[in-house]
Length: 320
Image 1 (cartoon, helix red, strand yellow):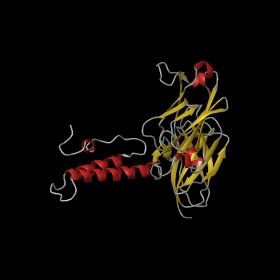
Image 2 (tube, rainbow, N blue to C red; image 1 turned 60 degrees about the horizontal axis):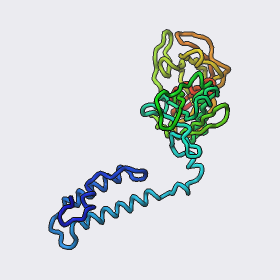
Image 3 (cartoon, one colour; image 1 turned 90 degrees about the vertical axis):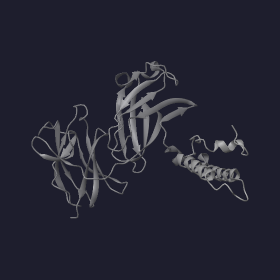
Image 4 (cartoon, rainbow, N blue to C red; image 1 turned 180 degrees about the horizontal axis):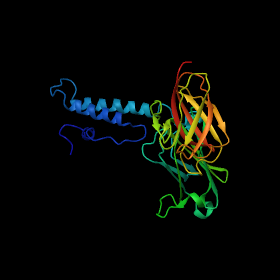
């Protein structure tokens, strides 16, 4: 009901504004706060009715919101920026063909897991092969999110009815070494089906902990990856024995060790090998290496096996 002596829209100021694209919760809070301040103001205003003051406040904030909403029209943004706008679905001719659902509040170095829904007829794609690649915008690092696999082996048909039509669901690890913008390109039979983009929060840069195995103390990720750490001096090489835990299938393929220093976006390839060795020291596989990191500071050392990210060890490199 309209309050006596006040226009109908005055009571609408007390309602929580709808949160729509461009209309942030902060703007909504400011509008509600201004409305409350106006209502609680002195009753004996001599010149303007207090509801008129509320109206001016509302219109001013609405104008600010509109300016924020149209500050950079999407059609005028550079094509490169548009290509990296976060999105979890891909459309073709107005029809959704691909959608990704990462698990939890994903961050860098966390195995969040992801469901990939392909909205294509089952008989059209189940005999095809799928591959998913991940590209890091800030550094250009390319990883294999899902190795080439037959959909009949890794996918399953969604049994429940779905608004977007028939779908096949495929799982992946969604495991990334650093934060930033990541684009995921999905291929069917080596033909790109579509892509999605996620902004992945980073984690704090701290040296990985030491942990004890049956024989040695290692630095790294317990039960996954670690090496005997004699320390790092900038510009000086040393030998490091890596230990791996994982299935035989996951530990197959050539090994590439990349490193990135805190505050930069440049990956340095520090070691390559044709593969890991046999089981030793309680680990499923071991591999000797010689590493040299060129500058002091905190470095993340990422291990890729068969092009797929395995895990990361963070180390502190001292002055020589």
